[in-house]
Amino acid sequence: MNEEKRGKYTTVSIPTTLYNRIKDLIKDTGFTSVSQYVTYVLREIVARHEEEKYSEPFTEEDKEKIIEKLRRLGYI
Amino acid sequence: MIPRPHGGRLVNRVLTGKRREALLREAGELPSIEISYERLIDLMDIAYGAFSPLEGFMVQEDYLHVLYDMRLSNDLPWTIPVTLDVDPEEISSVKEGDDLALKYNGEIVAVMRIEEIYGWDKKEYARQVYKTTDKNHPGVAKTYHRKELLVGGEIDLLREPSHPLENRILWPIETRVLFREKKWRTIVAFQTRNVPHRGHEYVQKAALTFTDGLLIHPLIGWKKPGDYRDEVIFAAYEALIKYYYPKDVVVLAGLLMNMNYAGPREAIHHAIVRKNFGATHFIVGRDHAGVGDYYGPYEAWEIFDEFPDLGITPLFIREAFYCKKCGGMVNEKICPHSEEYRVKISGTKIRSMIREGKIPPEYMMRPEVARVILSFKDPFVH
Image 1: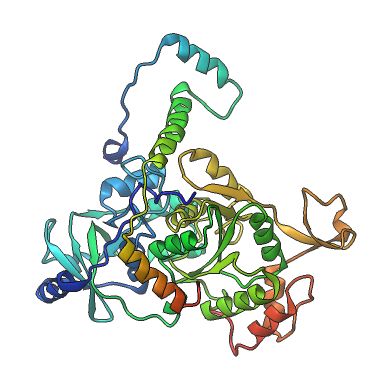
Image 2: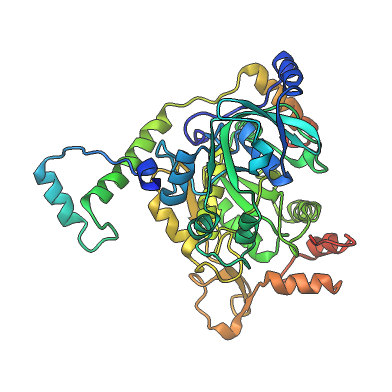
């Protein structure tokens, strides 16, 4: 049941040529399969793209209140 | 650039104003359970966004993903389950979908919407999280003492008990504003549960050479007997900063968070939490968050290879020692001399000197720091 709950894999198609290229590339590295390598690389890239879409979550009013507190505590 | 919080949004589940008043009134009519101090700390970490993107205690799907894959069910890295344990009889009157009031010392502190109630295997938890089932491991011992069921669901914090060090505790939104005000773009965070010795100072300054600012972030929360008390750690760091750090490059702030002693998994957890506080870099020590000899000295470094999407850069700085030939603090990478010239800075040795009321030698600890520690009648947790 545990496996069923968490083990969710799906298939993504990549060209066979690319698959073979990756297979050669990961020989003698810590990666044990093409899937493992592709997952690693995709996670790295996705995280980088997500990073670009963000602005801080506070309004000017929140910010003023926080700055006031930080002043009172001697941080500013 | 200050990184975005883990998962992209800084969680805020602290209710204020009329909504809080209304929910507090309603909560009085709800079934309730009493929670421990440790779970209260988890609750506050969730509510104030230190554990972003968690909005509550984990449901089973997240719990299992974290336990076996070290990721949440949405694929985000997360290595330590955050769970609320209960006895079956405590929740016999509630079911999934109900609201539950959480009390600490008899007072309502939060409301939880129960999404799921599920069983757990403590031994398996210990095996996965701590890599041992030995009950001499402090984290394993704590796990075995926890209750039989877990309850998952979102929480809203309504009230928080006062804390003797509350003026030293900052939450993620506050450090994020602070770093912006200071115009820091790169911030290295240093996790600690110890008073600073010369080895710590060396590591922090080595990291600070490459970043705009340093966040010294001592854990305030459960620690094992023999660790230094929170107020002693703060006083010791204040002395060190006053006498030995340049102005305006250091922030000393407490982090209310439990210590698990889960070694490599906890190193990742510590890094994620520091990312939520706005740090861009995180110092990972040798045997980070380890205890006894349960983990290899560099396991906490190696585990970072599995997380290309962490969003915070780990800094692996080698342990420092004093070299009589070099005439200063160095590490094995930069010192060519043999063992006979090297003096290890041992926390255990310093601790026993402090217990005897002695000031450690200056190459181990700054005298100003040692004097502050010795000014406390009893600097240790019992």
